[in-house]
Length: 157
Image 1 (cartoon, rainbow, N blue to C red):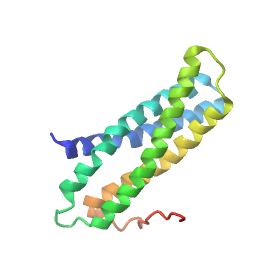
Image 2: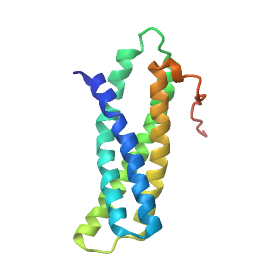
Image 3: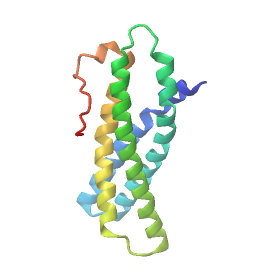
Image 4: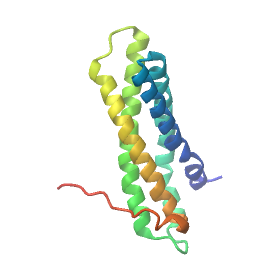
């Protein structure tokens, strides 16, 4: 097993796990159930931890596939740009989740903005992770390349 295999093996977990965690979070918010909210914090924080090796092995995966027939370098670049954004929001959600759990364990009041940051980062992470997964899939799966057009993220300079 090499780093490319690890990237391909693990990349699905943060995407699906964060989606599941966000659904638990929505259920917890709607029902005002603190156990569900706390479970969502644990799930999403764990998925944030899993996203670290996925992100760190991405460069090796790129080196493995960029010279293969049918691989388009621009698809890799688009995937990489979205991966950076998704990883950033995933880490923000994980860090906010860790702080939330730390305050809870200490029994001290949690700042009200902390849960808002967690929710905000989680929902951005879910969307970005899903789109990052789509862009990654398009690198080698020609059957999905034309299903949804890819766009390069724009930045305001």
